[in-house]
Amino acid sequence: MAIRVALVGTGNCGSLALRQLVGDPRFELTDVWVSTPAKVGRDAGDLAGLDVVTGVAATDDLDAVIASTPDCIVYCAMGDTRLPEAMADVRRILAAGIDVVGSAPGVLQYPWQVVPDKYIERVEDAARQGDSTVFITGVDPGFATDLLPFALAGTCRSIQRIRTMEIADYATYDGATVMFDVMGFGNQMGDLPILFQPGVLSIAWGTAIRQLAAGLGIEVDEIRDSVEQEPAPEDFDVAVGTIAKGTVAALRFQIEGLVNGEPVIVVEHVTRLRADLRPDWAQPAQEGGSYRVEIVGEPSYVMDVCPTSRHGDHNYAAILAAAGRIVNAIPHVLAAPPGIRTTLDLPLVTGTGLVRPAVS
Image 1 (cartoon, rainbow, N blue to C red):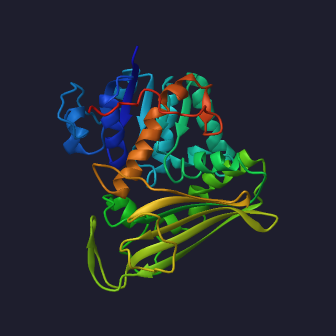
Image 2: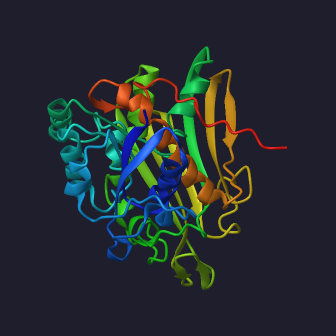
């Protein structure tokens, strides 16, 4: 019997998750929730960019979605700028006895020692009430900061440091809220957007630091963060608009987990809007962008992951990977005990049912 799944949020990640949910025979799509009035009433196939009619019309009524009692809700609504609302949504869904898999709220990837216990307990209480489970994941933070480094670390005799990196050109990233409000591109130099307010980086990627530490069996004493900004040398256009000369056009930020005063777990992001900006910063392994895991130990490793797609560039491929990680985890989440679950809890998601040999 197909797993009954609803989707909440049809933005960059949600629309790609929806595309898989519509076409994957493991799932039966029950509902789609949208926040944009113009999307209400549109068929799920249309919202997914597919030439099919599913008979599932989009709604802006979350209560109606919950009332249809799917087995699982894929939650891809915006969480960066509406964390309290996203947390409240997840609690409502869990209390109703529905499992949640999604991209937000990101703090639930591994919330322990990252957010206050009282907020964690509220989610756990809702999960106990509904006998339900939540698993939040993505790329970075996500499988590039937990699954991949864990796979390499499991082959080592000793480890001194683990660094994970996203190195990407975001010029084609089509998300104005993330680009302008969250990351601050196009802002005046020195202005602090949401992401760079004091402590926010250490919360947003603290989930990755704390989860790696838990998996490695170590205690992180302190998490510290830093950011550098680079101005645009002249006006130029990107997918979300114009970046004016002198405003922020490249970023490098770093979050460090310290053990005995030494940075043992490090997450670094190098994000440019033009490839020629700050050539002294780390360069991607492929044109446009890549992810990197570095381990200093015995043995040491450098692993570059280069997402590509026949339907879009590196940014599209990375979002597609996040959506695939979310959707493919659904059967494992349904089988997991109630509560907040992480990569450390779930079995390996292997891609069961996804092989479709090319027709010669």
